[in-house]
Image 1 (cartoon, rainbow, N blue to C red):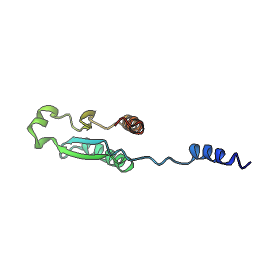
Image 2 (image 1 turned 60 degrees about the vertical axis):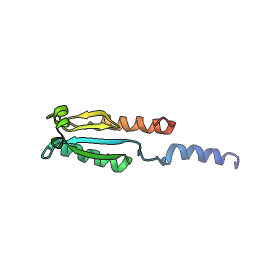
Image 3 (image 1 turned 60 degrees about the horizontal axis):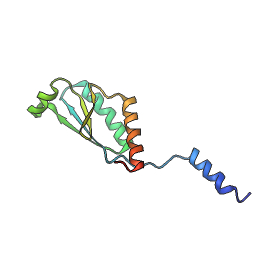
Length: 113
């Protein structure tokens, strides 16, 4: 029986104990926003909640403060980029965000970041 205890414990631990996951510090979320935009406020709240759980960096940029951003996005705010790539426009879909973070965590575990 002593021979089986470590194997049994290992199986139990891998199935039932929570994994200690590393924060996703390699991800940079930038949200292009506009003052007074309720969609932007909702998106920011969602992103902040996920940021606290996942550890990625998050910053907001006011579209009206940069003529290039106004020309690029106009009234299409909020726009969320992740590491420079546009991922969300108008709202943050939590299902797609969860999938994105899961995929990034798998890439990080494999050393592909």
